[in-house]
Structures are given as C-alpha cells and as structure tokens.
Length: 167
Image (tube, one colour):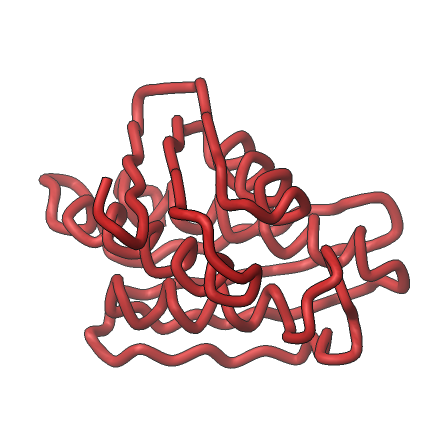
C-alpha cells in the first residue's frame, strides 16, 4: 500500500475487503464489487473523510485501468440496477478523456457525515485515474441511501462488462 492507499480488482474473485475509513463508502464499494461479480481489495490510509473518499475513487481507478487493456476487454459497458425504490443506469467508456455526466444531484446529501457529494467525488476520481467517461442516469429514486446504492451497483455491472468484453 502507498501512503495514500491501494486497490486490487480480481475479475475472477468474489471476496472483497474494503477499508476506506468511511463506513458508508465501504458498504457502497462492496455492493459495487458484488454487483460486478469481482473481488475488490481496497485500503486507504487514515486521513480526513473527504480525502479518504477521493483517494478511494483514485485507487479504484488505478486498479481498474490496466484491466481495460486485457484481451477481450471492450472498454465500454453499461449497468442498470435497483435498490428498493431507486433505479439507476451507468454507462462507462475508456475514452482517455475523464468526464462524469450525471442527472443525480446528491450535493445536499450528507452520506457518512461528509460535507461533499460522496458519489460525485468517487466518480470524478475514478474517471480521472482510469481515463473513463462515465454517464449516470437516475431513473427513479427518493431515498438518498437507495439512490447511492443503485448507482454503485450499476457502476459495478458497467465496469465488469467493460473489462470483460461484455459491453
């Protein structure tokens, strides 16, 4: 592990061990890995929670980036996932032009007591580190907890498809 943190993605694995220092983010990243049917090991060095969230997104992107170059990887994928009343769709493309476009505004949500939008921070850092264009569409959802869960599960499915050639 570096001073900031490290992540490892095992496309054939099913076990995940996530320790970001932010319990809600740990849960969301475990849901992401479970939905994508891959193992995720991610550990972030202790810091203030906002920094830990950004580092987690960057570490995940750094771990995923080489997987887009594997034989058979399409570099693009989509996922649609529910979480109770929420339904989200995420589309990813390895474009080399980091960009996140989303209609889900969670800026007023204080998940895990954070002062920033947890999803936007993770997605921005993930996109930057892996060179991804990420589109998030919230189709339905009222509960911020369920919306976050649906987004992260859809992201896991999209990433799995992009790295396994199922895009």
